[in-house]
Length: 113
Image 1: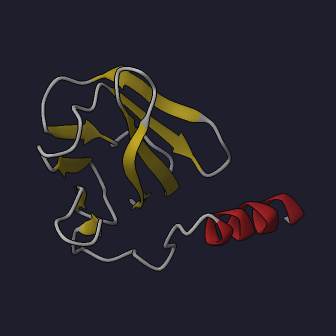
Image 2 (image 1 turned 180 degrees about the horizontal axis):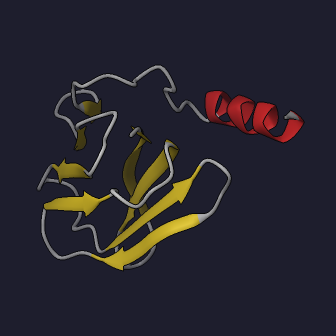
Image 3 (image 1 turned 45 degrees about the horizontal axis):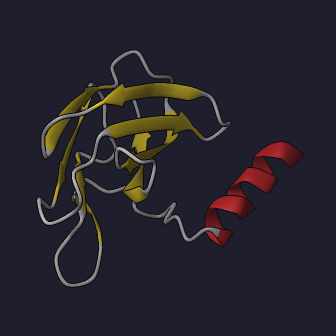
């Protein structure tokens, strides 16, 4: 229980919005959204779209709140449909990186059944 409490505090400290558990898209960025992730919470899939003005994203990483890596894959377009039907209900962190490993953006999303 203490570990879960510490992980939750870490998410708040890093600025992740745990309250964004709605059906509307999660938008990251100020002027124009960098990443749009929906539906949230998800049941079978998560659609991820990002602004083409970002440097091209080449690597996608999804981790569970416990740190378990769910996906690490190469990507080639500005949209992605991620199958989450076999994920355990809970909170997940989505991150995108450029080819040289620079962090481009990300968001948290919830999987519910």
